[in-house]
Every structure is written in structure tokens, then in C-alpha cells.
Image 1: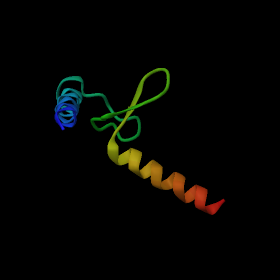
Image 2: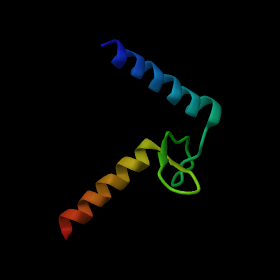
Image 3: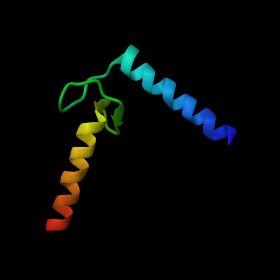
Image 4: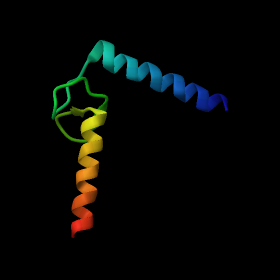
Amino acid sequence: MLKMFWNDIELFFYDWYLRHIKKPKCLVCKEVATLQLDCEPVLWICENCAQIQSELASEDESND
């Protein structure tokens, strides 16, 4: 229970740091991004664009 609480606090501060201090820009829409893509160089994407891309990918898979 305490470990889950600590993880929530850690994620809160990491999210706060990204949004208010670092402010990486989304690759697609140029808004403040919170998700790091696993590539070189390091690229960022916002949660909205990631959700849209996920929905588009699942549409493509269902069409195949």
C-alpha cells in the first residue's frame, strides 16, 4: 500500500516537472508532451496524440 502511494507521488512530481520545468514539445501538435518515444534522438508526444495514433493503429489492424 505504501509503495503504491509512493509511486503515485513520484509520478505526480515527474509529470509536474515535465509540464512546468522541462516543457518538451509534442512531435505532432507542438503542445506540452508527457510521453517519451523510445527512439534516438529522444522525441516526445502528448497523451491526446498518442491516443489518436493508437486508435488509428487498431483501425488499421481490424481492416487487415
